Structure formats: C-alpha cells, structure tokens
Image (cartoon, rainbow, N blue to C red; front, side, top):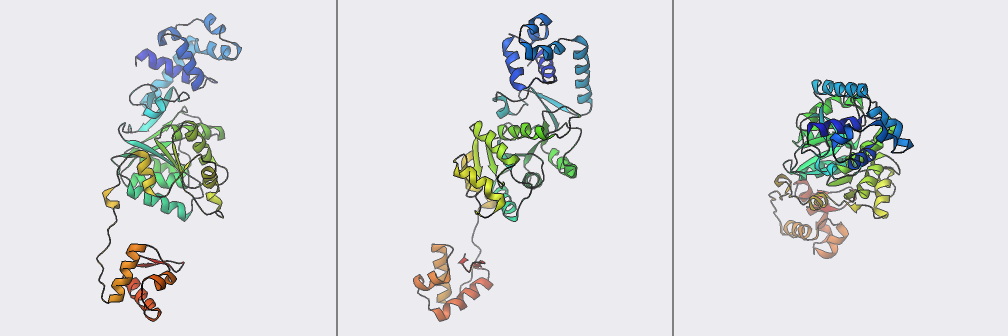
Length: 364
C-alpha cells in the first residue's frame, strides 16, 4: 500500500456520514487512490444527491489539511493506524465488505499465524459462566490462540483478564475513541491486555461510547475471529448481535447450553434451538472448530490411589468403567452388598479417590 493509498483511506474514514461500504464503493469506482484524491467537485456532483454534499467536503483542501494534521497528532500520542489491506490489519477483517478503512490501535500488533477466538456473554456473569471460561482457557494453548472480546463487564472482561494472565495475546475491541476506556474500571485491565496484545477501535479520538457504536463494535468482534463462543446471554443483549454477525459472516459460532430455568442461558438456548449455533459441550468443541491441539497441562491423569479391600478395588473399577453413578446403580451392578457399599463409598471419598456430588452421585 502506497502513502497515497493510506491518505485516501484515512480521509474517507473521516468523512461524516460515509461508512465502510460507501468508502469501499468509492475506491472501486476510481481506478487509483490518486484519481480519487484528484477528482473534481463536478465528478462528485454526478454521484447522486445523498453522497454529493459529503464528498464535496472531501475535496476541500483546507478540510484535508486539517484531517492529515490530526493524523500526525494521533501518531505522536502513540495511536497506531491500521489500513485495510495492509499486513498489520487483522486478516479476517480484511476479507469483510463492511470492515473499516482504518482501525486505530494501542498496544502490540497481534500475531497473524494464530487462530482467533472471540468470547462474549452477559455482563451479569454467573458462577456457571465463570467455570466454563476457566476450563476452556486451561485447555487452550497461548501459542496457538488469540482471545478477542469487547472489554465489557462480566463475561468479556473476565475472559480477557484470565487470558492475559495466562499469557494469551488478547484483543479488546471498543466502541469509542482510544483516548478513553469504557467502563472506566477496566483501565487497568486494558493496560494488562496491551502488554502482549492490543486495543482496537474504528472510532476517532474523542468519540464517546454511544449506544449505536456498540453494534458496530460487535460486528468487529465477530468478524475478527475464526470462531465465536457465546458463554451466557439473556433473551436480548449485545452478545446476540455479535452472534448474528458471526452467523451472517458464516463464521464458526458456538453457544454454551444452560438450564431452561436460567435467565442468562435463555439467549444461548434460543440460538441452539434455531440452529444458528453449534452446541458447546466442552473445550474439545473449540479445539475441533479451530483445528488446534489441546494444552498438555490440561490432560487429566488419575492420581495414585491406594485401594485396600477387595470391595474398594471392585467399586473403584466399576466407577472407572461406568463413570458417574448413583448408589442404586452400584447396588445392582457392582456385586457389593448394601451393608458394605456405603462404608466403601465413605472411605474412597475421604481418601480422595472418588468425588461425592450434591445429587448423591459418585465418580472418579
């Protein structure tokens, strides 16, 4: 990309009312960026009433001078500019028709060789959602995956903080200019993310986090990723708009199922019912979707177990073979007498060989 291309892309991105689709159409209308920059006002007048007034501003030399001076000030403040089509522009966004001409960035460029997983969900994260994220990130490898999300409270922020702490490259996509952080309490989290990752925005410095900006932000969360995981969502919310974008872009979309009575699983369950998303059944769902390998530290091995009596050995072998079971099933199939079964279960539980769950089931 030439310096002239960068200038044209930047100026197009700064015209009020000209979105990425119109900007892309203009670039395709003219043979070169230089031809676009040198186009007369008469050429713009022939393009239709709706675009005419906006493009007349584009041809104003003073307006251009002021915008390019602003660009230099951004660079001086440490804000990087990523131009669509360049190597440092996120590769999956490059392929989207509605991706921004220019992205603003702070932090470090993200790897182009790793897979990108977007994790989104409700701001009212439950213990269930937290455990799902912990288990997933424990199973993924930082050298294979970049984690992306929206820096919001709840699922987004928790996933990004845990990922950054575990050495993942993390991308935060925000709905405002990079001179502020929203929510403000995530300023420290943004700093943590930018040590090894970056914050991206399509919004110029000074743009506040207006409601409509979050929908635009959500399309980037979906577009930047190889796969998107919705951890928890109510019947409505930003996570579902991200899911809609992922579905529309024909990206891998997975949802964590939940109980029918859980408010913050209703959105995920609806996505699964309408067949928009695949059912997330554990880390293997993401590992298969991304075509990556499981982290070695997540391969679970059974601890050394000291079994003394024949009943302990028999019951332990039964649980290894059959998995999580109830005492009624053990009585029927293990061959251990009722008078001995509960004593054996108690000894194995106290020794740590098996786990007793709240529903009165047991497993190794």
